[in-house]
Image (cartoon, rainbow, N blue to C red; front, side):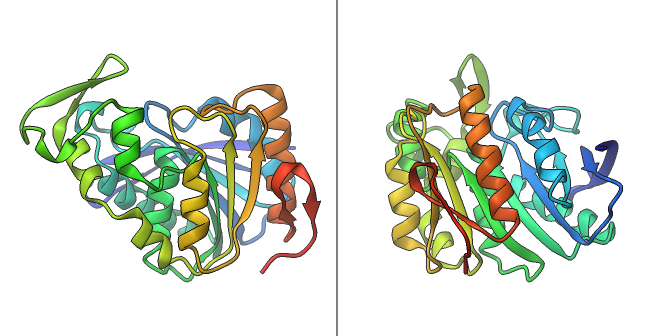
Length: 263
């Protein structure tokens, strides 16, 4: 039986962050922290559909709202990827306080970018990464995902509209400056990348960039005809299988063929 518990903790700015912890009654010191994507939250469709299968492996699962999302304390116009990294650091600290000393970090889209940036700092409690639709080339994301050709020249104090939402230009200028490929080069733990072959927001070429810059051998699950959201029943089923195998120490492979054993 899966138990869900509402939780809260505070980030480096003393903002209250809302979260949810899922677990079975078996306990254990291993867990998964999920970081949601832009305009999503801790109760996003993917993670709520995956929660049971993750906890069925004996791992606790924690999802949380970044400081500008959901029930947490900020406003979406003030979003910052680097602040999301700080929020994730606070989540990891909270999780460790609950007895978790082997932590798998899982993120989707912008949450996967925050996951990569945090993991590049070398936290020894991080056991592996599960990255869904990860933007490694942030300038490509700015141009084709957000329609911003030169974020570096945006007025610092202005705002831009994304999907009908006003966002401070500081967010786009920040993305323009971040070197994700350099962060990837610092990763030393096993990584599973899940990506839709037809992702129009974060092009599948980002998987190749991830693989090119990563020292550990990358495990990949490319979902045929999958889009950026990966919310079809067939997408969820493939992700469930891949994540269960990964947490058990296996290595999901391209095209859905699973092989045992990973670094």
